[in-house]
Length: 241
Image (cartoon, rainbow, N blue to C red; front, top):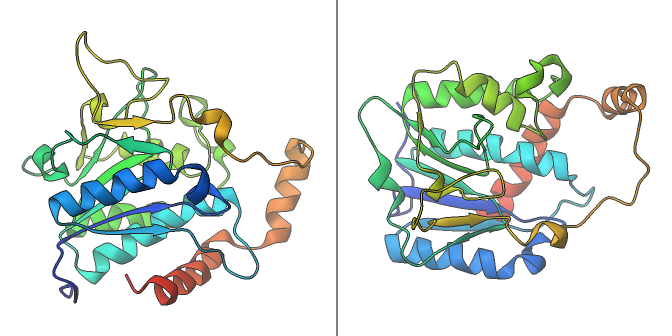
């Protein structure tokens, strides 16, 4: 049985904005904070980096570890939103999407695939098991997934697992509106994700690696799963979430 959190908030909302994202997307993070205050959520923007740094890929995978940890801490709900997602003032509470027997909520893009940039999770043993399974995939390269499900960072594995899970619910694209989603005429998005802000993102200055180079680099770096465990300890100590 999970323990109740020590905080009074029952919904934990967070974003990860390392490597300068907190400055570039400050207006988005401010909108997250305002939304959290309005609905009584505990909100943290994880902006610090450990001494050894953190890559963009590991920042993306870190959200999986943080979601799982927050669920195990006993939060009733967990809400992740990307740093470059702007939440409008009129967005309703995320709890408004809840329906019976569904515990993970995401929008899909025009491709039919899930976008993990906005995820709402209701705490239940099956949702914890979903993220435990997802975290165990941290060292599995995306190229091992079906071609139609491959995506950046952890998103390909989210797509692969979510398509086959009975506890995942598709929610309106209004909750995660980006270049690859469509709204009905006269509809207004709740969350504007990345539109007009893509070019503001920091870009790696390194050379593009071949497939073989990328695979060797991954092997030389060691297990991402254990690195994520180490990163999680750092962020738990720094932010006390």
